[in-house]
Amino acid sequence: MGIVVREMQPGEEKEVKELFTRSLGITDRIIFQLSFEEARKSAGKQRGATLVAEFEEKIVGSVSMRIQVIKGKRTGFIDALVSDKELRGRAIGRSLVNGAISWLEEHGCEVIYATADRYNSPSWNMFIHRGFNLYEMPAQLRDYGLNFLRLWMTEFHFIGFGTFFLRRDKEKTRHRETREAWHWLAALLGVSVAWWIQILRGRGPLMLIPMVFTVVAVSLLAHELSQKLAASRLGLETTFKAWGSGILFSWLLALLGSVFPAYGSTYVKQLDWWYDPEKDKTGIIFAIGPFVSLMLGFTFWAIPIITAETLLAVPATVGYMTNLLIVILNLIPIQAAGGFVWDGKKILRWNKAVWITLVIAACVLLILDILI
Image 1 (tube, rainbow, N blue to C red):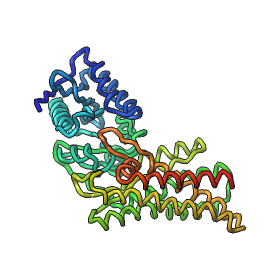
Image 2: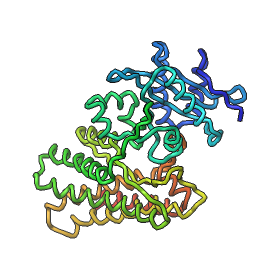
Image 3: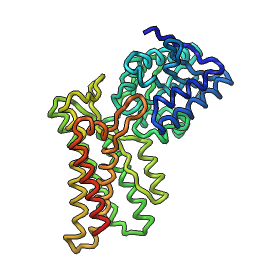
Image 4: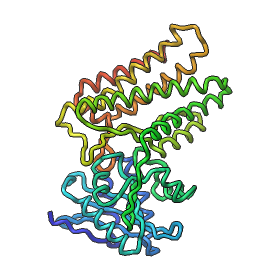
């Protein structure tokens, strides 16, 4: 394509920001802008830079790098990787990542970190092919202790639920992934704790704690395992991954009196696989989860109506709210940074009638709860 990757020159900041504006959604634009500004500050201290990809005298991509010394090691961070949305799929991102790795290694970095949009997205696959490995919280705690929070702050990971840390070692060290069972436990406890905080805030009886955990477990397992089963029927192997940042974010909201079940998701495990809207059958993977959650939502909503047992009212409300929120999150039809498509948009692309039906059913469930 004739792409040239080089360091950003003084006066080109405006063109890079215009690239963000035309290629990113508003939420991603804010996060990328923060990373870009931090890289500019680091560049002034000789500890960072921004690379741009140029094509036909126009900036069509950028990536920012920063260097910090953590526990005596020069540590590099790759941030704000973006390519022009009109030219994606033409190796712009790959060229920028290669350039960022070379720049950081030339400046003495022994370890390089990046965050990837979800698990097995195009950006995820690109980093994995360049020697990065999944770097999960157990490994972060082992290596840094509570200093892992510094990594999160540096990468704005607190507001990046749905993204994962990736690490590239100069010695080509490979970090073993945490077993799926531990991810399940983290997710179940993560959402349960958010509800337990609400119970304690309302001075509810402690006997509700195990009941709420049971309701959360049924809700999350039914949603995720239905997707896993649908994928298996299509010959696809999946894995469940919890989002540490999403869980911590949900706890912070719980302390403020709100609940937001950003706990994790089921992902196709095969490397270099991603959703293809032309392959209609794969859409069922993403539609079955909201459908199951809707059925559970209606069931939990009906329990207080058909039974006089008042002790069941709180767990039933927890089940209703958890499933309704899961449905809403899984039906939002947006596309994030790097071109990653949320489940709602996958369903909409696959079958508009199915997406509309699920949205109407969710609205009916919400209206019934308001009216009755």
